[in-house]
Length: 228
Picture 1 (tube, rainbow, N blue to C red):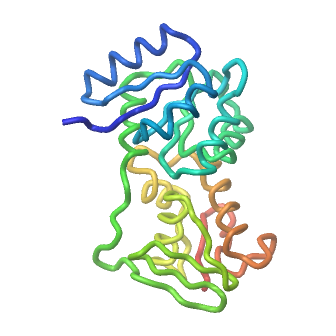
Picture 2 (cartoon, rainbow, N blue to C red):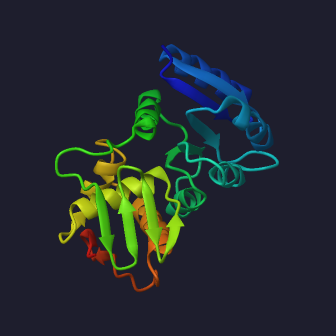
Picture 3 (cartoon, rainbow, N blue to C red):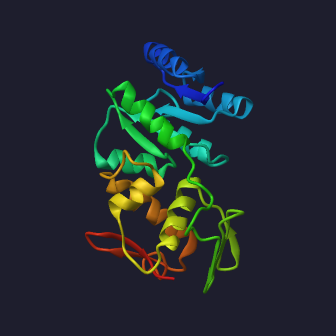
């Protein structure tokens, strides 16, 4: 049984061969694309479970390709890059990536990141909220519907899981590490830049004034708090 279908997008044929051999040996089905343009042509036909996307490619680069994918799909996208600066990571996350892996990487690390990206937080569970209504924000966690300021808002899976966790613990600060591990998985905890990007995106979608939020508050040096 396939563990999922992965679209590998990289202009280096040797990297694609290694990735294919590794992923197939771990029960993943693999589709390959050499360019961002090829990936976008394949995407609607193949409907992969996850995209591994090289950041630096001729023509349409990884960021452009990620934005195009994110414009019509919420499937996980992991950016692969030789660059390791926070600026590059933030740019990738801003473009819609779920994760960022620096080359060269260990295979076990990459497989762990793939499993984390494919993982979906459970819809409910003991103590998990089923809904929220307060002010101009209404959320049905069972149907994953969000309305803010009278309009339906589309959240990515990561944004939704983050908001659900914060609301489930509203009134108390949630640390960076706790939030990262709740949303991305137990192998995370030292990626505060991920939270900054996703919290900013959430605020743009649910706050009247993202610069002066009333729902998602920053607790300096600690984490975030849902105050609704």
